[in-house]
Length: 174
Image (cartoon, rainbow, N blue to C red):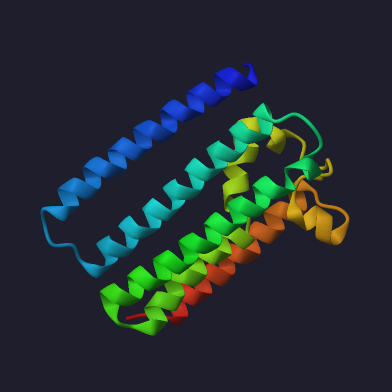
């Protein structure tokens, strides 16, 4: 399967998932939701958003030829988008609950999704890079910081971030 075919297939999956999420939100909007239902819906939307950004990242990388370091302006703008989403989610959560702890919990979750490079996991799956976890992943920001980065290091990094997110959600409850 070529990169273009994989991209088209991915686009169909993402748009179908988005349509299903929209239908579910419409149905849920017609009735009152419990706090747990709201949290699960919110979390599902954040995961969907990161999947869309991972798909967009995949397409940009395959459209633009060259070394990954040439894409630094694109990656900085993508990180800016993530940080803007963090502020928007935090502000919206605060305006809905008037509880700064819950707002911080939601904002930190989105920010840790960025730090944990969860959108990149969607990218890795579509690009087929998870087949060789021993190779150096030079396109990752961690590689630029530490001088090396492999798939196993990314798995460890992501699991640590998931543990931190779970800790935050356990610590900060209504």
